[in-house]
Length: 618
Image (cartoon, rainbow, N blue to C red; front, side):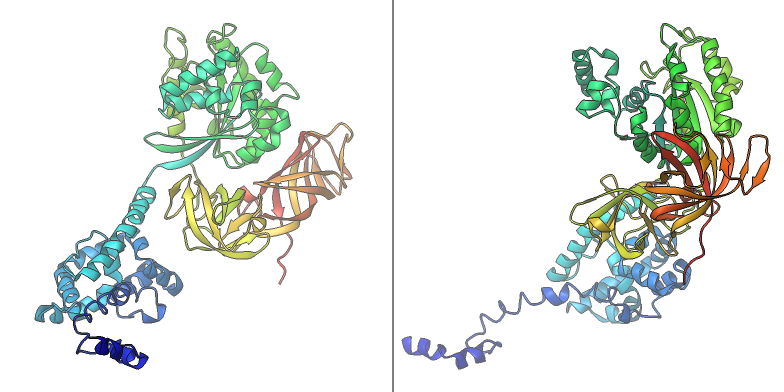
């Protein structure tokens, strides 16, 4: 045997044997080619969809996607064909598949014929199978095609396991008919915003009993037994120790009709910029008023945050304002109608002056955030005998007995899912790529979209969209989302930037606007050209200067062209210059990008809307 072994050592002999000579290597031949079928077999079902050049123009599925779903847009149609899982959201495709279900047996025969085990019936159906295989094969994720050879079956199983979760996500998220609303809780410090927010979460079963008991013990250790519900929202140790919210707390809850996100804004005047960030995302404002003797007066008087918060809520685009008169169970109040009417009577004219339409946009309701009365369940008539008659008579602009029912009755208008995408960036972080946080103000964003980041005008691709930790196939207006942006660094995405699809929004450093002068700093008794303040629009902040006043209108309606200055209470048409370009639009085109405030020295000096932008440069 040694001479024979020596004859196999030369490399020339090895090269003849390696290709698979039939003589001595016959037993080993099956082991060499057997691993090779998987590589060519795996891409066979999916090789044609990714290649745009291999699309069969006569394929009925391609024609359906191109003509009916994409309206002739070939780029979009190719993207959909290349991602078959996304096609299942369209009812036209589902109907097409059902109508062709009778051909499924023919497809199985064709697949067996490809593997070497088919017969004449597979060849007879070859034409129809070729037309449907490319588009339909990957869409069948139910794992019914188990008759193919082992290699093809393994490939199909792999496709099934990876594609099934994506289909479930699409149906679960896009099929949810419940509208999403952002609620911002605003008001003077110590009005009970965090306590009310925490009790809502507790009453909707988002906080378990054991956690509440833990917070009760912690609050008791601080000699603040009534703070335990606020601990649900105030998770920071500094916030708990001082009893003051600093950052905007965030939480979510659901009802049968809506999905809600709570934004618990800080009430202290030092944290108004944080409150602005929260209110800029809100659809509904909940203005929390303390009915306790002395607390309402301190919050509503000049310098109190009740006034500034209500003013900012209107400026930042809140559609509805629910005024809840809290702490009605206080010993100084005891659910007295006189105290409720006193608070409402003082608030009505002020809110009207802020620009709210009282009958349509403002609702009033008495509650106890600590005890939960009128939050989820109506207050006991033995405790408050007048509220049932009030809401049944539709007094205070509401015909609902509780806060939860009132929230569910609200209907948002003006959300445009078909408009270009606009997502002001609230914040960003890195996690295997740059992820931007924001609220979808208009349009519908999907993974794979090409976006333009304003004001830098850089273009990127969307790698993924999430709501909290839930992957989304698409996000509609009103959703708070996380957007993973392919190719962008942390320095490319900043707070105040706007994610856009074509055509992108404008980016300017000059604008003509209409402002209403609300207050002025102590050193400036009048507003003149050269007045400097911080410009707040959506999530953006920038240094601004009033460079020219065109006209003023006083409270009596008298207009003065070319006025040299303006006083508090006047409406002013003026030009504002910004230190750097900011992505904005006119109020008429995109209201959420056309509102702004001017603040300086801790005061909101003016609220305004953008009337005109400079002409576009070629």
